[in-house]
Length: 114
Length: 115
Image (cartoon, rainbow over all chains, first blue to last red; front, side, top):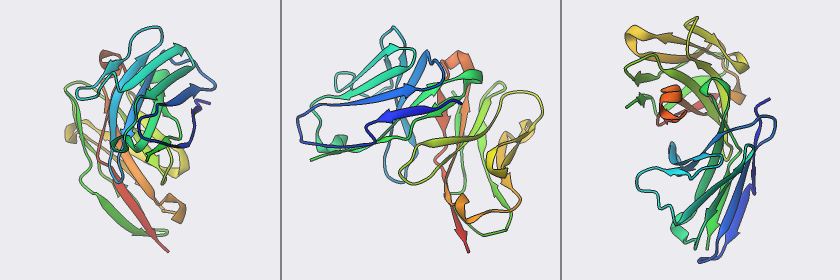
């Protein structure tokens, strides 16, 4: 139980284009999902908290217009990187909040912006 | 605000040897504590968690951790390490519903297993 999927697992795009990443909780409902960014050899950096049916809460320093988050249902949250640039290249990981305040993580999406 | 310290950036052990990864946290009340493992290019897998009750918790893959309030620690242990345990290990602390389920992660410990 408590499986979270992400799609795509990796994506290469040209600078200036937008990329959408999906995060789904497959066998449980998640009113809250989280989006993280991870740089090589580093820990996870929380970008935003996504709550179903409401606006996402962004961490300090994260551009909300650059990273659009939508939590359309209890099993789906999406992160759209708008007008991507090479510095947005990173590993993006989502998690879904389950029972007992436990976060279950997706497998991650590697984004490369050329 | 809560914080987590993982003092060891890298640890190398021989296969079959015992393992202990250290984690110290800072939080005023009883925290929610977690250990996750990450293999290269993968997401995080939950190993075990603690939020109340027995201070010695058992997890998957033969791991266990002990919550010691007096030391503000939640160290991860395994009696006999397997080569497949080589990965990055993250300790995390949360305040539960008060912070909307947000977690604070340590910087991670990279485990290398020598055959």
